[in-house]
Image (cartoon, rainbow, N blue to C red; front, top):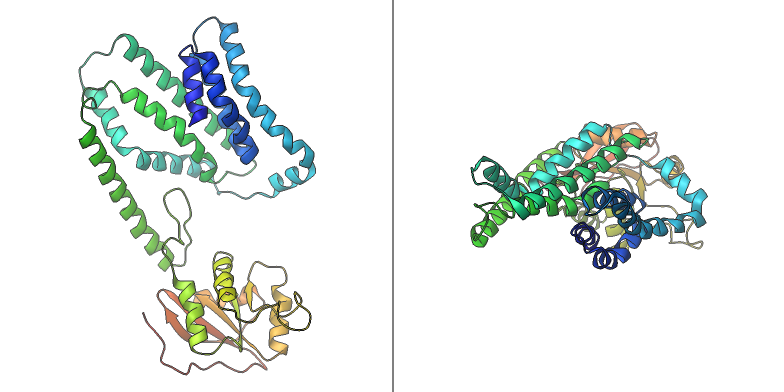
Length: 366
């Protein structure tokens, strides 16, 4: 917010105040996350395009605005080899078009009431003159440079970035929308209806996204974007660990989990004080009891578990999902359902030389 407010102040001709307001924020933005640098560049371009005075005066203001951001990136020179390696290993979405489309959808969800006012203002016949017209031009310029920075970043990336990389642009884009609509007749003097519209819009979008997420998770998907988080409100893995303890299976099994479920499952496993690789005479080299199917050591972990006559179990949506999890670890065999907690089911693999865990109580279908 200070970075956007500072750029706006500089465009209004208050260059010194804007520079002081934005300087520290522009320095911190790329220092915290390198992908924030395009925002600083976009706001500097906004100062150049929409500022007052001659070209050279506007250029000097834009350079003054952008210099703290460049200074914030100098830190990465001290860790340049690591920085380059991390940037080369980053993953992303399958398509830049999908990223752009999702950003538009998320911005619409974020600012639905403002967009409604914007459309109403465009359809009204009230004449916008003077300062209001100038402010609308500046708002359009701000939105345009931010859009240009987003599109340029997507096109320049080796892989399409995750949408969350561009969440920082929602601040100037929201600022631009509000500034554009500030003089609309349907906006002025109606603070309470506008606040109500914002609350209603947020409720509808949140409920819609929640229902969609539940359906996708039930199909074994893991949606994670600006509108959906598959793990939100999900206590299934905590209940799975609790059920393992209740059935006294924790000494008999090694749990295989997907990369999405592993961090949470491992956390609750440790919170319960269940056995892990830190136990035994040589801490850190013991048998891991919760294994991610994306871990390079998963094959050796499974072999060690079977040699110790432990049972491999997997947390999945259905038997087909469990077979995939076991297969990722190089294991095949007859699969038996142990219990179900919510939409998650625990399956055991009947492998050669390993005893089959038989649940001592009826399976839960809660």
